[in-house]
Image (cartoon, rainbow, N blue to C red):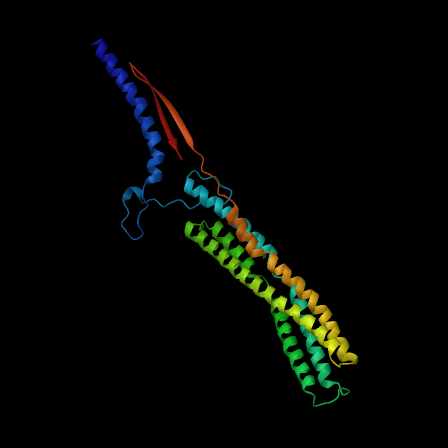
Length: 290
């Protein structure tokens, strides 16, 4: 009887230690592999509790998938912040466009009203007035638009991202939406950069052509001087801008490449060892979570 009582005590002790240990180690794996309920399908009562929202940047989640989401969201917040800072609305560009447009328009008006210009029915004089006013009006419109902007597209997007983070709406799908926006902007920026580079290359050849025409034609006086001056300004300016456009990346391209090059935080493995004693053996229960 005493031996049976001792055996019962050992078995009760073993069950009291081994069963909770197995349940403790199996609980994280079960929680992580349990399927999520399908939207619209009836949800069992045991999983009817609302799912906790993703933690904002700065928190330390334990789920590997949530850690990856947090790492990407943190990198995206930094990327959008730099884009908003570098591509923000600037009044200087608006003033520059406005001044350039006013200068072109003023030249056109001056040529049109100058009574000393001969002959008065010159085709070249009419063409100069048309080009000056057309180019000047375009730059004036761009300047007014630039000065009227209170914030840029990148600043609006950064503010929207911060609102989603504060409202705990930063899910996998929402983060993928921001990644797609930054990627599309980078693709468009690359296309625009190369287009402007080719346009500036053409402008450099045009500037060289102006210098050559001024030297070879029979123009004299102010006509020859203004042609030389415009060619001397346009050719080096457009050549430098073309080289920069072909050899350097835009801000959107750099930030997207930087975002993609940063690796996510690797999940931390956890190993748990629990000793279990029996009348005849000593066991070690090993569990792990990833």
